[in-house]
Image (tube, rainbow over all chains, first blue to last red; front, side, top):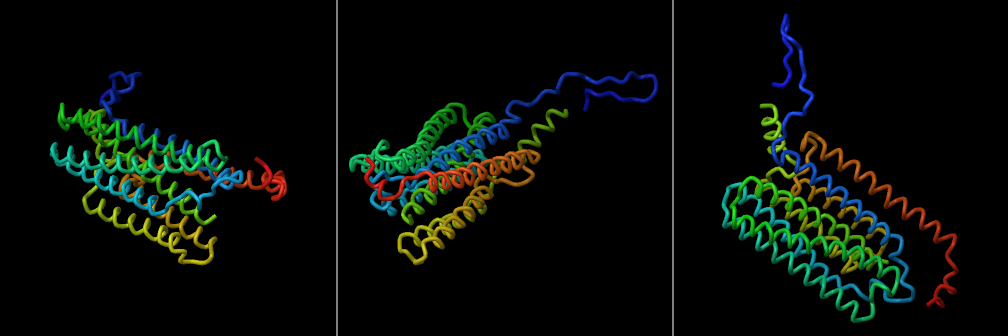
Length: 208
Length: 124
């Protein structure tokens, strides 16, 4: 610590009260991690609600009547592929290759959009069959949980688009690298939440 | 000087530290396997026992979450000087309490308060 001077003899001993300066973005990663953890708690509440209400069909359609596991498997593949392509974007970012980073981000975004489209198709199909959120407690909690995840993916895509514009304008400057790393954590976190969704909602729903 | 060192330290050991191509590929292959097996089990009904199937797919989910944490999120006990891991442990504790507590309490509430099954069928 340069702000502390402890020397023997006649020199005074003093401490500066002020905290030393933090470099910009020095604690962003930890802060963003804490945000993700709080987001995790939101999903925990929604999973708990689904766990409690997931069996209350109110004589309406049950998971077996509604879910198409083949479609869910395709959806899961899309999200998994988008995770690895985002990983490739981070690797090319480390090497400072702007074009390749942008390319991988675009591929990731396409997989994200494919995921969203399939999910919206599934929702539309269910609502068309009368399985609306107000039909039963099971469907209310299903649409809240899966919809919240879908909303996160939507905002992730908006964020990705924003960062692609940023990178196109300013290149892979330090601030943009930091932002891309935050989005990386967000994106992989959403994939982790999806593991919970496909296991507890879809697969376990089919077993009920 | 100390501030600069601090920032560099955080950068190299950050929560989203840079992975390697090998790490991402290992993580991807593992998660494909860990996803495919539960889907296969449920879609083909490989096991007759539903409870056993449920326990196995939950175990696969837990393993896959750990795989994603390690290979994609690059979690390790040293990242951010241990603070990420501490926050994670705290969150996992809360999640376990919320999930198990809700299911446990509400199961007993349902068992004690619900009308009999035939009455329920007549409800709107």
